Length: 242
Image (cartoon, rainbow, N blue to C red; front, side, top):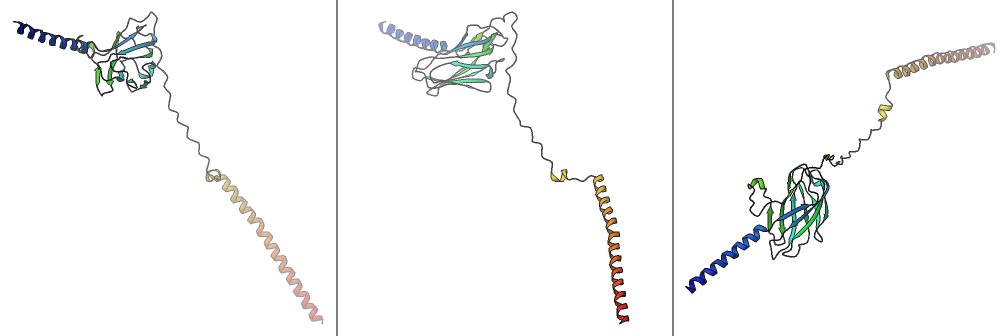
């Protein structure tokens, strides 16, 4: 009987230890809280706490996918573990840095420009450790029928919007600045292009100059010939008289 009792005690202790380990694993998660968790509230600080599941490796990175209604441009980093930095992505952000001490939780905070008009917000999170381990806190309550399996995404429940609260205009995005193409300077051929009227004027000027020059030239020839004839007759008369 004593042997049987001892054996039963050992088995019971092992089962209890396994259940305790499973319960501890299921209890670990990422939480999110806010002082003014209300739809359409502005400049709200969200505080995240990622619990550690490892006694030998520290948390090094938390990669978050933003819920519908929020974009990376709406989120600014407020603070976190020493040496950690905030990096915006396409659909969320990442906070990462030197590993926190093994077994310690990683806590950080961000400020959201305005919470969307929703009942709750789920922030799917990938939690990385210094040994390469990754915990995926990405399950949504509606996908599990309200019964998570230790991997539920951190979810913030929102109260109804305050009376008169309205969505703010989207953050202005910088338009790409494209310099206007420089106006090409007019080419010499374009500036010196001769119009038909100018061409006609030039032609008339040329014709007019030719018509004036020709009579003058003929008159000079006639004068030269007359002078030559007069000199020839005078010389001949002198020769005859002698």
